[in-house]
Image (cartoon, rainbow, N blue to C red; front, side, top):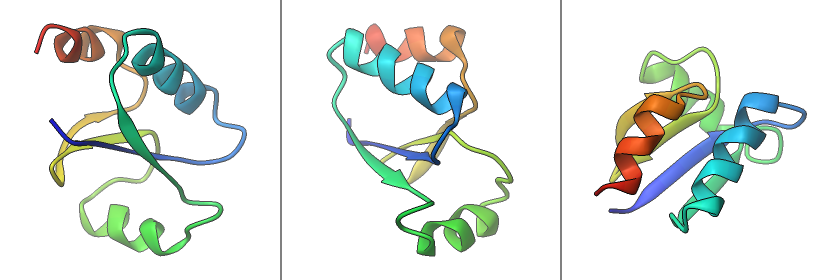
Length: 76
């Protein structure tokens, strides 16, 4: 599993998602759209208008802070 998470500054859902992943020792690569604005168009092309977005090998799997779906990552 190769997770990427797209976030932005001052986003409580992003912070909660990163905290959940870290607490469960799930590694991820973070892309902050404030410091890496090229990812804004990338996410828009995939149909997303909000963050956080989590992708597994470039395949979007979670949008927003979704503890129910994040728990699925723990069991994988």
